[in-house]
Length: 75
Image 1 (cartoon, helix red, strand yellow):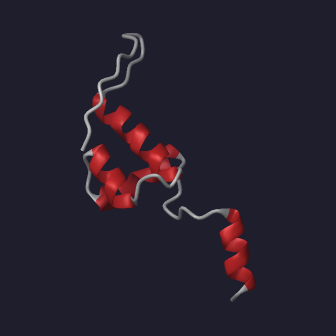
Image 2: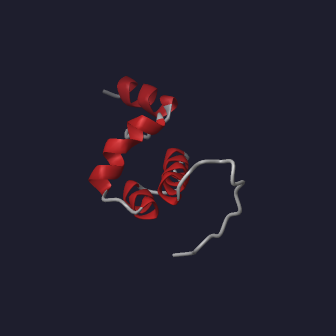
């Protein structure tokens, strides 16, 4: 796993855990990380990460609307 160092302003009151969660939820939402990978980046278990997704306005059901429409049409 890569390590990333970021310089953020002192006025931004965010701790490392919150920043890791923001990055991992965004990458999960974009489909660049699986649930397990995103949980690992955040330093959490899959279950805990999944439970916290809602508080970051990210759905655990990471499907595109077109996929859902296609699935319903094929049901």
